[in-house]
Image (cartoon, rainbow, N blue to C red):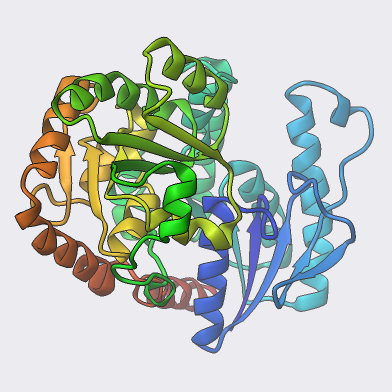
Length: 403
């Protein structure tokens, strides 16, 4: 079977999007399928029309030119047109059996145009509702004109694609609510490569000293500093925790739009000696930072994006047998069973966050059972080999329909 994946961006860029893509492709190849890969003009770091990255060959789309490319909103149509043109060339070269387009909807529209022209089945994968992310990033207003247009475009794709895949139950239910038959939708959940995560590594003592963590109880967050992650809530909760347990400190690993504001809040709350910002760290060094943290905290705020979409970072933590505390938004509830594989607190409530944290720190005897249950959940249900197996039925159904 020959599958052509249509992508927004890819490795060598690092993001949850690119990591999921890479895992899917690697597992599909392990199943004996041939995979091909094309990125849209949104992958702005391309240096050639064809590039090889870590053994994977990517077809790149040139940046669009012309009148439309310089106009707000209309530039998105230029992205679609440039991708459709390049995709048509690639289809002629690789002769795929299936076109598999991944979010956002711009990719799906270009892929639908080419799939219909060549009589190929289209699988469309919805990884998130990008209009909701745009609201969080401040580039769109909820239910505004741009929001509704993006939503309508994706709903159109849901109707036209031969099959739909998505990453979690929250998104699946929202798609069904738009009038799409449930039988058309398959959840291919986010997962981890269990072999890449070691269980229970001890912290590097030299790094611990360099970071100023010696003798400390370390709370931590590793990821991107977006508003929806709720990191200001964690800072709000910290003073009451420190009052009860002065050895507590917070390690924030990563960066993003809120980084400078979080640093300002840290100073305003007189927490400078208790909060360590590392900045972004190389991907191959992240494990050493995980090893420094006693309790991973994911305080996501409640909004459409977080209620519908499951995050990846808690899975990575559970794969290592780490203790996890997270807000009770819908995406986290799909991953974490409160009191069994991790602990949930009331979203948006710093007092409950502080209370649940101190309770966990005060009962270390329950940690081994929770750690083992989290690891077992990932091993049995959220590993990439098991997740990608689900594509077999999806691809078989669209190929059967083609015959």
